[in-house]
Length: 342
Image (cartoon, rainbow, N blue to C red; front, side, top):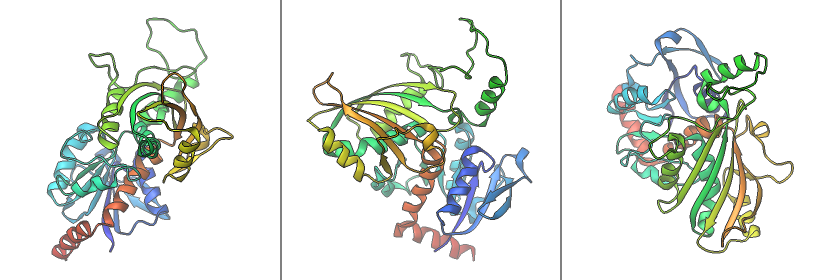
């Protein structure tokens, strides 16, 4: 069966990569429509060897769309996603708008594919935070070997995680002469690291740090306690994470290596160590520097890297869709809609 596809936010970093990934993986599309805001209507975007003319997302009729891949901001998604879902379309949403909705599954296909059993409840399937996805892929095989009780993670997140605007800001700052800082000035991103992503909450955490903790509990296990420090670094693509894991029972480095090496979507890379530069443009989650943490009874440390635009957004969305179209109930839903439109 082939599916009628729309990609919302097709001119953005994630949307354009989404079109690339759909073409690369040969997703069974009967038709693909590129959608974006009114200011982008009429532009063209690439889908494999084809150029698509961008249409207006806000006024699109979703009654003849089976799957909408949506890559816009959360506020926009809260308007578009329910409207598309009400028309019978299933939305795979890259924003944060619905991730923690208790009636909506939050799926990383290598980790919790069974959560897709609830795909029809609201017909909205969020994509987790990019930093959460790569962490979940690495935690799951270890958690299956020995229950994880606590995770402490420091993230080093690239500028593309903040969208095209941050990339343009980085380029502008890099073009300026390096200047001494001022304690009360807004810190630049170039030649710097900034220890805040998203707004600060009342408890001192940033919203990004809060999201990671809540999403890991929803995807992997609600019993896991997680403390995050999320930092923006002047790297264009690729998020890195230094992770300290505490287990309820012993797990040797050798057994952890065996579990990670066998895990889907993950590459254990010892030399050279994985970096954002080496992960950029690639699909896997990379793990390096696996070692014991002797400061706790049962602890391991590791370094995790992934391309935040591909695995952290576009690829994970397409993998959700691939898992979805393998389900007979979803195929029947789309067959019924397509027959009605014929």
